[in-house]
Every structure is written in C-alpha cells, then in structure tokens.
Image 1 (cartoon, helix red, strand yellow):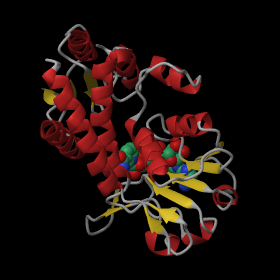
Image 2 (spheres, helix red, strand yellow):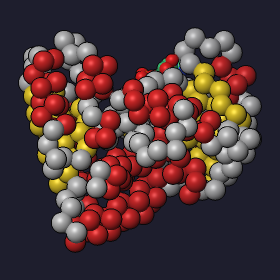
Image 3 (cartoon, helix red, strand yellow):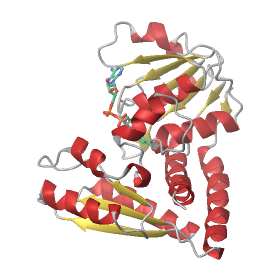
Length: 283
Ligand code: NAD
C-alpha cells in the first residue's frame, strides 16, 4: 500500500505559516493585497475565484475580485491591469482563465507586472525559472505546490527519473523546469508521444496533468514510484476524479496523492503563500 500524500493537511500547515506571516506584516503596517480579475460567467471559474477569495480572507490577505463582462475588449482588460500595476497597495494580480475568444491570453500574461505576477505566467518570470535564476521570482502555483509536497514527503529529487505527462504552460512546463533545477532527470511526454507508457513505467516520480480521467493505471507505474495526480475531472456522477486510476495505482505506487485532497488544496495555499512572498519582496 502506498503512503498517501495528504495535500489537504499540508495545505493547512502552509496556510498557518502564511497567516502568521500576514500578521507579522500587519504589525509593520504592511497589508498584503491580491486582485483576482474574472471575465465572464464561467461557472467553474466563479467557484475557483470564490475559493481563492475565501481563503485569502481567512488568512488576513485583502482580496478583491474585479468582474468584467464576457464581451469586454482586450484594451479595457489591459487598461485595468495597468491600473493595478501602478497601484502601490496591490501586491498580486491574476486573471482567471479561461478567457473569452476576443482576448489574447499571452498578451494578458505579458501585461501583468513581473513583480505582481502571482500566477508566475509572465514570460520574464518563466525565463527566470528556466534559467534557474537565484533571484526571487514567482512560479506557477500548481507545480510550486507540488514541489512543497515532494519536499514535505522527503522524495529524493536529485538523480531521480521524473516523468511529466502533459506540457501545458500552467503545469507541465514549469514542473519540468522546477524538477530539472532540483537535479532530477526530466522527461516530458504529451499527446504526440509514441509509446508514452514506456516512459511512465520507468518513472521514479510521475506527475500527471492531462485532464483525461484515469489515463494512468497501475500497470503504467513503476513499483514504489511517487505519483502526483494533478487532474481534476468530473465523472458521470459529478464526482471529482483524477488523471490517475487511484484504485489500480495505489497498490503499486510508493507514495500517491488522492483526488480530491491532493494537489488542489496545495495550489490555493501556494497562491496565498506567493502573495505574501511578493509583498515581502516589494518592501
Ligand atoms: P491542458 O489541457 O492545458 O494540457 C493537457 C496536456 O495533456 C497537453 O500538454 C497534452 O499534450 C497532454 N495530453 C493530452 N492527452 C494526452 C494523452 N493521451 N497522453 C499524454 N498526454 C496527453 O491542461 P492543464 O491546464 O495542464 O490541466 C491538466 C489537468 O490538470 C486538468 O484536469 C486540469 O483541470 C487540472 N489542473 C488542476 C490543478 C489543480 O490545482 N489541481 C491546476 C491546474 C490544472
């Protein structure tokens, strides 16, 4: 039986640290502030944004959600971002995705000031990550949270064969850079990979972020491997389920994250942690 990597519990620990850091900042008259921009009426986005707002308030972070209509122009959105870029009371700015078709997502990520880029998507920050910079810079919260999980569960990274399934800008690519920076041997496989399972079966650390429910089964996993399931899919009953078939994977893996209660809570905890880090770095 695999050891369960309890993201929910670890998120509580991280959140408690963040809360203490916020209290300490406030005693010095510094009030961390996070702005979330929500465009349109996407139901899932509304839930994500509400959860972020709620967590921020619990931790003492000032959080404002700015709602824009579905048909907002790119120019209007960029103008709003620019206002927050110039607002000294704002420490973190993020735009919830997905965005409507008329908006160029890459232009939005470029527009957010790198020092307020709490999602870590600005190409300048991505460049810092890929060049293994020793400066302080924000990193995409899901892979950063996964690194915290691997550390907390004492997973050896240096020299490990790490395989990432999925190459998105939000998860797969920054995950690859973080693991490479930690001296793992990194392979990224994706929808065009020939014989993906030949790679996954050789992974000491397997990170799965595809959005395809139960893509990875027990037979695709090296015995004793650490398996991190990023997927958040709804099954036919509306229940949250991962990209890994937990029931067949759990007896094979050495350590494994559940869905829900794994990567999800750590992503939000890391977003809050990073809001505080940006606040401190800007002092
Ligand atoms: P994405 O759609 O941007 O990317 C999916 C990736 O999977 C692509 O790179 C694609 O090449 C790869 N892929 C698709 N089919 C494949 C196949 N058959 N074999 C191998 N690779 C395949 O997705 P994303 O934004 O990276 O998100 C992936 C999943 O993670 C989704 O379920 C999303 O909801 C979830 N997610 C969860 C969190 C969290 O906090 N828990 C955060 C971000 C994303």
